[in-house]
Each structure stands twice: as structure tokens, then as C-alpha cells.
Image 1: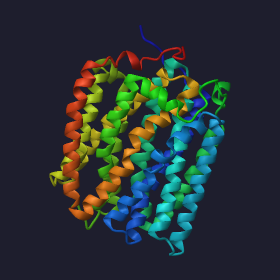
Image 2: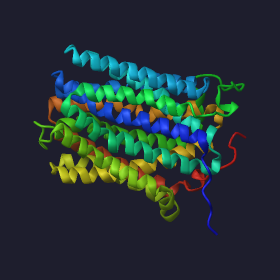
Image 3: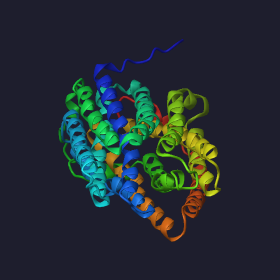
Image 4: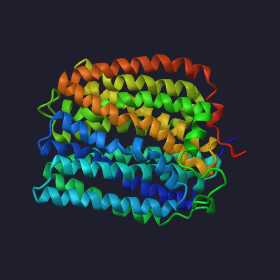
Length: 412
């Protein structure tokens, strides 16, 4: 018998539109900021410092972001965060047009944008259970993941590259306008009363989410493995632009680099569209192992001095695995976490798993200054292989399939 899909509703569609529009802005800005740093005369270490600044908010501010999300109207929070991001980008645009932009200014903007991201991402994943019944959450997460891949990675970089080819101010200005437009979609949302910030007894402190996460063995272990893999991902995030864009070894233009970066989004988009059938066919453990393999292929081609086509192929596989990982783990976390703690549990997970990215990006920058970019990618490849070898026994041993199934309530 065919099972009809669960309707996700008008409120989810508002969140969906706002997420897509804001992530298109994210994709453009993540692409444009390193180019702004290069235009300001930054060294490879300076370019890597931009990535460090963008991700520094998670280890410093992440737990507080979760605490805030669990206490305020998430629709108003998302709208406010997008308006702040638009204001920061408007300032960068004005600075570039005036010829006054410097690396310190870009770093300050990156810190502010990073802090805004902690609030936006935590509010997004914590809002889904307030809009969608358990039976529809896997489908909702897959739809959001596909949208993020299309806008943030597939459309954002080439659009930013095209606009940056005219002037970088056009890329940053367009990003600011997209954040403002995202607010219109959020106005369509109607949240349930449980999402507006009630304070259950005994769960009001900042670290409550961290305590819950650490006591939940599956979520805890997956979070730690995510952290290990994110150390690897920090290397291409910080240094791929140096390796790819002329005078780097691949010799690409800014527009060509934008197209190269879409390879990862292509893999992520395709995978997110078939994540649920793949889960039913192969099981969660197999898909998560495939993601760990993709992490190896993300960095190995650069370490081996491969051409742009092989680098792109590795990014397709890595993007596919990463997309499926995020869908499965997000659904698991939403189903296993009490609604009143979800913001803090998500933030705690991000603090652990994304908190390593600033350190990884900083080490990558130092390594590139002391040795060279390929040596740093070779070290990242070694770490990815070790992580894969450690993850396979866990994935085969743990009972992951039952945990990602939607359940009515896990608060008991």
C-alpha cells in the first residue's frame, strides 16, 4: 500500500522560503569574504583567519545561543538576525566602495556574521518540531537540506563569482538584500505555544542541553565523530581558495572557483533528494560510513596534486555524504530531545562539533605559512583515514536505524 506524504503546512513553507533566501545570501558571503581578504592584500594565513573568525562564535557563544533560542519567539529571533546580517554586509559594501576596507574590518564583520549564524542555525533546527508533526520531520529536514545545498552551495558561489567579476560590492550588497527578503517568508510562520520560550522547571540553565547530550550515547558519539571530521573539513574551507584561485596551482579565476565549489552542492543536492529511499535500502550505518569515506576524498586529491576535475569529483562525493549525515543526525536529535531543550542540545552539539573548526582553520593557516598548502592537505588526509577506521566499528555495532524513526514523544 502506498503511503501518502504528510503535509508540511503553510508555516513550514514560510520557514522554507526564509531559509532558502537567507542561505543564498550565506553562500554568496562565504564565497565573497575570502576574496575581499585577498583584495585587501591578505596572506594565506590572513585568508584562513577569515574562516577562523566566521566559525569562532560556536565555541564561544554557542551554548548561550541555544539558551536564547529556547526562551524567545523564534520567528522574531530569525527576523532580527537576518536584519543584523544585512546591516553588517551593508557596512562592508560601503567600505569597499569607499576604498577603506581592510583585513581587520573584514575580520570584525566575520565575527559578527558568525555569531548571527549560531542563532539562525539553532533557531532553524529547533523550529522544525514546532511546525511539523513527528511523521513528517525526516521529509522536512530533507527538504531544508536540499534547499540549503541549492542556495548556499549550488547557486550562491557562482552567483557571487559572477557579481564579484564586476565588483565585490555588488556581491556583498546582493547578500544584504537577500537577508532582508528572508524576513518576508518568516512572517508566514505560526508557531505552537510550546516554541515561544516557556521555562520548564529544572531545565533553565545554559548547560542543560550539554548535560542531556552527554548522557545520550548515540547523539554524543555522533557529535564527537562529527567534530573529528570537521577538523578535516576546516582545511579546504580555509585554504581551498588559495590552492584553486590564480596564482594557486589550479589557476582558476574567481568565477571558475565559484563553479568548482558548486560540485559539493551538486552532490549534496542529489543525496538529499534520495536520502530517505537510501536509508530504507541501505540503512543508516552504511550511509554514515559513506560520508566518512567522502571526507577522505574531499582532501586527498589536493594532497596528491590532482587536477581540477578530480578535486571536483572528490567534492561531489564529500558533499553527498555530508548532506545525508546532516539529515539523519538532525532527525535523530529532534526525535530524541525534549522540545524545551532542543535549542540547547543542538547548540551543545554544534559547540563540540563545529567548535573545532576555528582551531582547525587556524592550524591550517599556520601550516600553510610554515610549509605549504599541499602538506596541510596531506596531514588532513591522514586524519580523515584514521577517523574512518575508528568510525566503521561503531557504525556497524550501534543500533542506529531505530533511533532515526519518528516517535511521538521522548520527554518521558
